[in-house]
Amino acid sequence: MPTYLPSTPDLYSRFSAYEGDVIRHAIALAESHDDIEINRPYGLDVALNLLALNVDIETILAAILSDVRLSDYPIEPEFGPFVAALVDNVKQLNALKVYSRNIATQGTQVEILRRMLLSTAEDIRALLIKLAYRLVRLKKLEQEEQEIRHFIAQETLDLYSPIANRLGIGQLKWALEDYAFRYLEPENYLSVAKSLENKRIHREDCVADFMIVLEKELDNAGIKAEIKGRPKHIYSIWQKMQRKKLPIEELYDLLAVRVVVEQPGQCYEVLGLVHQHWSSIPKEFDDYIANPKSNGYQSLHTVILDADNNRIEVQIRTCQMHEFAELGVAAHWRYKEGSKQDIATEKSIASLRQLLDEKDSDSLLANFRTELFADRIYVLTPAGELIDLLKGATPLDFAYAIHTDIGHRCRGAKVNGVIAPLTHTLRTGEQVEILTGNDCSPNANWIDPNLGYLKTPRALNKVKVWLKEQGKSKHSLAGQQILDKAVRRIKPRKGFLVKLLQYFKLSDTRKLWVLLGRNDINGGQLNHALKKIETTKRKVNVKKTFPEKTNTLEITVAGKNNILTHFAQCCHPGSDDELIGFITHSNGIAIHKMNCDNVKQLNDEQKKLLVAVSLKGN
Image 1 (cartoon, helix red, strand yellow):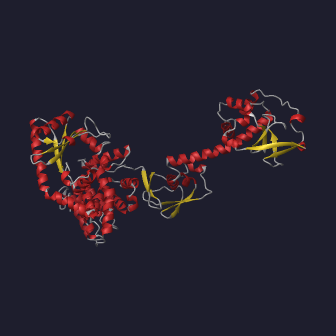
Image 2 (cartoon, rainbow, N blue to C red):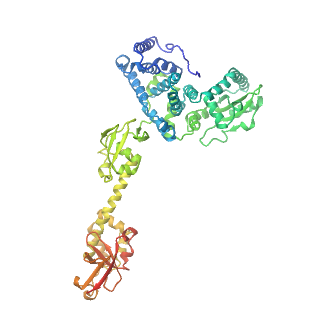
Image 3 (cartoon, rainbow, N blue to C red):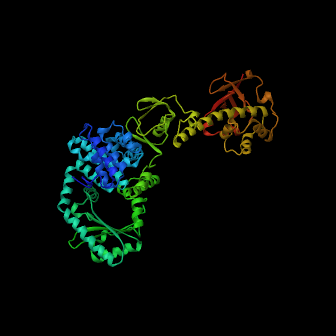
């Protein structure tokens, strides 16, 4: 089995005598309670795995006191509010059981679940404890059924090792990955492990010998540098074998050394010294300093052959390049995982990784609480799909996040199976079911910030657009009626509508109607405009042009008579003219000449209101 973290370190050597006594008391407390689940990690085992990370006393105590045997024990009276809060946060993380095989097949859902875990860690130390807890859980998996082993191992690769990687905790990342790989693919694991073990001592000697010679050459050249060597781990070797489709014997970078210098020019000096003293493989050389990767990553990469023909990868970079590669937009975990993260995520991860390097325990304690994803919540659909929402979001926000139509038709919601108001503030981990109705629609209260129906900008915008469209239709009808009355009263001359649109600087009649309906153009303004557009008295021969009595003509509209009609005043239609009818919303059918300017100005939607009209004398 892989072993990267110390199994039996001195738990008390890093702490004061008083702190040691408190730790002993916590351990005794856990061991005094009956065992509940033998396969679950004990708090002491979790604490031992955390020592290598230089965590503080509160983290050690919280790890011990998170023991399942103390699930109902009151922590605060004996250990204080900070440790108690940390223990509660660990329990919250342990209680999240959202991961499923369905989620595992969806990259976006897996990424949302990672963020959900990060956001649930109110104190990031709780997440460190959770990662160490998972490592101990993996070590005990041999005692579980195969199905459980496979599920937990896959969950580890999908969720926990990427989080350890993002936090820069290489020791935990490698251990989690190797244990998970062992349970998921035992034959491949053993094959790689056997190949490595056969040459483990040889590989370590190769790296050590190379570093000794390189360090001497750099000293002679007066170049200050930090040199680190590390053999690759089992799972990362297997990944590279699959990616490059090569057997383990043909991998160039099983042995790797990183050289960090002060100035960019020194990178090339080191490269020259390396190539001068060792043979290199030209096709494996990459200059990412002169030609940075698209994500900004900079470094020199080369592969050399030592005296025994062993391939050793050498990476050369400055301190600034190294910091950028670890903490900036080119952070190692980004191009390793290939996931797409936003700038806020990158900054949050960078700050967390810097905290892990903090040596001042007081500063560490003050800064370890994190605001990472503090503005997000993660809730579940009834089918188990995760939805990422703004903190403070409601079931109505959730409905619009699913689909606009679901939001528009929302009439209620269930949260964790219980009916909840649409103003309920959702919390991470809750399951939400939206109740809909075909006759339901948004109302203006939803966008009132004081009523608390909606929090997310997307949902607010969807409701505003819907209300605006509904308002346009309503105001358009009202505007048509207002204009119709004004025209019948003032009787402007033919072609007035075009001039009216020009007067108000509008492009089409519908906009005029909406402005009239909303009273953006009031009655006085309309009357003034109509009178200003050369009004004239109606000059018609009633007997010749218009029927004086309705019984002198038979008016047929769309094949039917006895329909309320009136003759439009804009074009003065007569019985001898080719006619068309327009359906008004307050005064029946308005009869126009077929070539009336107002009819020609109608848009496609308004043309749907035109009907055939014929006149017949008795």
